[in-house]
Structure formats: C-alpha cells, structure tokens
Image 1: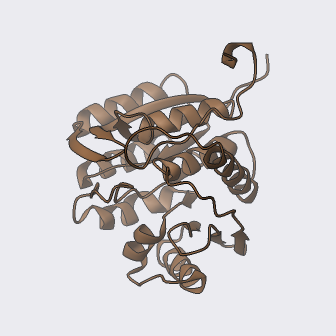
Image 2: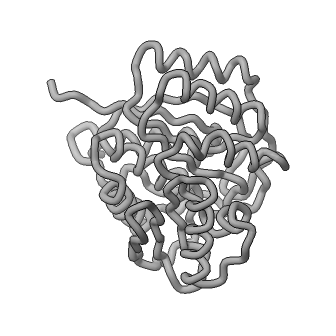
Image 3: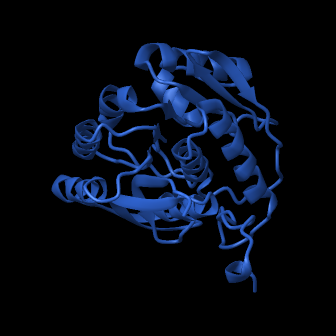
Length: 269
C-alpha cells in the first residue's frame, strides 16, 4: 500500500464547520493526507459571527499533542487559532520536543466577521516562540499590518511588510493580498527572494475559512514532500477552485465547498 502522508492541525473548533479544525480536516482529506487534530479552543460561531470561545487548558493541549506524536507522527503541522500566551508556549515547547517538521503557522488574530480571536500580548509570544519553528507563516493584510507595524494599501506595501517580518522574525512569509482592492495576488518572501502568486478575483462573498483552508492545503502539500513554492502554488489553485464552486450556506459570510474536487463512488450522490 502506498504510504499516506499525515498532517496535524493545532487550531480552534468552528461549530459551523467552515473554518478552524473542521475546515482543516476537510482540506486534508481533499488532498489525500491523513488529518489529525489538537483543539486549542471551542468556538460557538456561524457565518454571522463568533458568539463564545472556550479555551482548553495548557495541560490538556499538551496531552493532545503528545497523543498524536507518540503514536502517529505527522509529516507536517498546521497551527491556526491560538488565543493566549500560555497555549502558544505549550505548542512551541511540544513542537521543539518532538522536532516537528514542515510547520505552517496561520497567525489567526481576527475572524472573517471581525471578531478578535487573540489576546493582547499574545502576538509577541507568537513571534518569539512559534515563528522561529515555522517553515512558513500565512498572514492576511490585517494580520500582516499588526506583525509589521505598518499600513498596507497596495501590493508594494504588501511586499515591504512581508519583507520586514521575514527580516525580523527569520521566517518565510506568504503575504495574502485578498483584502486589497481589485487583487487576489499573494507574495512569498523567502531566502530565495520574492515570488508572486497571481490569483483570480472571484465574485463570491462566502469566504469563511479561506485562511484556514489555504494554510492547511500548504501543510498537506509539504507533508507530501512538495517544495515550499510548489506547495503554495497548488494550495492557491485548490482555494480558487473551492471559491469558484459557489457554495452558498448561512446568512453571513458562508463556507467553502472543500470537497469540490472529490471523485469516486463514495462521494457521488
């Protein structure tokens, strides 16, 4: 039997299924990898917003990560929503302990609805503890503005902000341009230089979980031994296809159809 890549997501749960752990696992299945999870928080949310958040304890999160690494070692790790300093420290400690490879950090600071998802002060710990372990971080424009401490109004600003974080934090940065007017282009800043990933601007208001989906797709590709640049390119193509599918659920910013490209008897109606 062909070996299946294994990927761990460390992130929050989304009760509506469009983002967080649920989006990550759907994305991983769509990429043919075995997905595992360590839940950082439960969220009561839907397409209209986040109603409540309940964090797990640092001890429980550590136990979750131990349970995964001690049995089914992941080939890649995606880190998503982590709201507090204590949980970030636990994740960093465990990833160092197990010498985890191919770590993708999606620095989730706000939800699509605008709700704040990270405690004040946690950003500095994220930068100091997790970024040095990561192969890639995937901030959107608002997150990159926080990380770079500068405003981003155009693609030139996007490059400069991503380069600033790359220089300061020593981590490859994928600056996502979807929040900029009229563009869906992303830029990768790494030791290899600058690479643009040109994107199709899709008229679809349903973007709940796009960041989770992209970062999980990248981690899945890295777990399958694709290089970084190819992993990003394949992931962006997947996200574009999921947006083009046009799924329309809920009363707010709806989720994507993560299974748009699934094929086979078990997936046919």
